[in-house]
Amino acid sequence: MLLAITLSALAMTLIVGVRYLIVSGAFAAATRVRHPGLYRGLDAQMRREIAWSLASAAIYGIPAGVLAWGWKAHGWTRIYENVHARPLWYLPVSVLAYLVLHDTWFYWTHRWMHRPAVFKAAHAVHHASRPPTAWAAMAFHPIEAVTGAVAIPLLVLLIPIHVGALGFVLAVMTVMGVTNHMGWEVFPRFMWRGPLGAWLITASHHQRHHEQYGCNYGLYFRFWDRLCGTDRGVGDFARSHARAAARGPAGGAAAGGGAGARRGADRAA
Image (cartoon, rainbow, N blue to C red; front, side, top):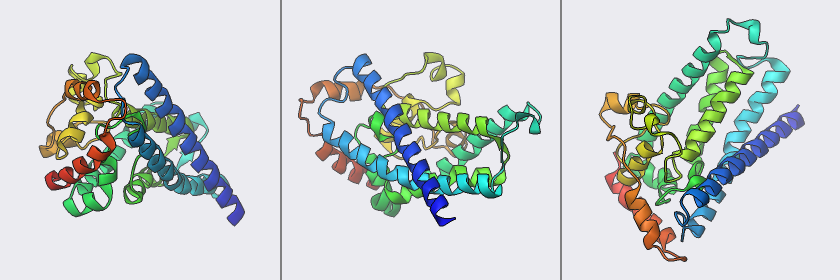
């Protein structure tokens, strides 16, 4: 049994790590095509982001692997495979429920991590990326990685979801985590400037969090930010793109990132 659990955890860690490398790598490549030079001078920072992210992959993969084994061997979770086991209308409802609950968990743990002591101990690792790149999506201190890693496992223990719908939730989580950090908008304008953008979070919204720290804490939706008065709207990327143009090929972004994170701790809510 112990061997089976270990192998499942290792397999899931490998899946999470490879998924991160493929998705972040694809969007990093798209950035080089769409905005050449945007990541100029950030090589050391990106290597650090990749190292932290691969460490986080193990922290995400271990509980996921244990639950995957428990699901197959003992039916521990509420995941089901027969699409007709529940009404078809439940599929989109379950996806929305997972996204809303995950967003709620993320908002409040994220605000907690911006308390000065917790920020300095853990969350400063993520904010050391100034500006963040497509590789920064999982660049977390282990404390922060643990808070993120338990959310979906807790949900699959409590709320029924079809395995395909769960895969969709994980895909949304991965894509949004990467695109929110890559320094430009990949989504159409209506998703972040129109009525839909008033409730959805994309890179324009999350970029302002990385610039100002004490605002825009959500992951998918702006509901909690709006309700709690922490929504400062969407920004643009003119400043970060101008800074990229001004950086030399060996720019000093890595050194500046640590100073920026220290300033962030002073401003953290």
